[in-house]
Length: 160
Image 1 (tube, rainbow, N blue to C red):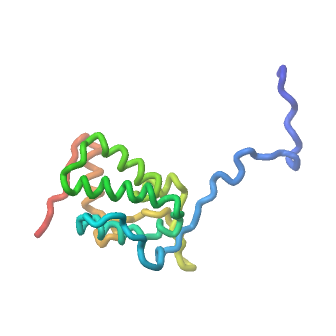
Image 2 (image 1 turned 180 degrees about the horizontal axis):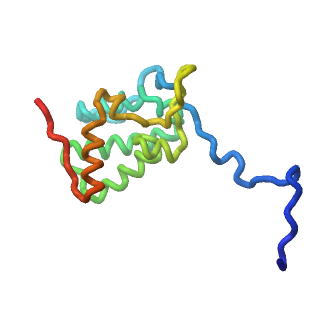
Image 3 (image 1 turned 120 degrees about the vertical axis):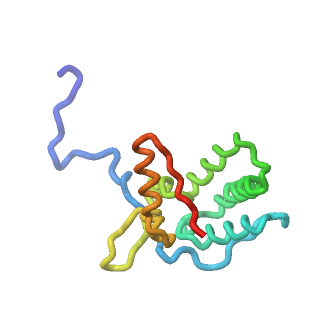
């Protein structure tokens, strides 16, 4: 072949993408300590509860001080959504902020974050098995996915 050099011997080969596929372990117990304060005072109780939840989560162990501004913006968007004041066009911004900070299972997989398990337990990507971890059987989700595969979307019926 013209312009191509012969392959290097195995001991001299270097992978340019070496180290790019390394997962970062997050402690299963989450972040310890109190959450940073939300700026201002006019927050819905649901936003305050969400803020405390995310700061106690395992994702908060990764966040830096520089992430606070984006998390504040996400809190403002969530608060506006719960008040009914959020335009549909802002949903993409919410999704982007959630993805950036690993606040959904897909984002955690993309960021290559995994939960550090105790010895003898299998390592699972962060967010894996969230239906079971939330106390559900996961059956409703599986039923909904099966319906989607057939072109039908079925929503689980709430029980009293």
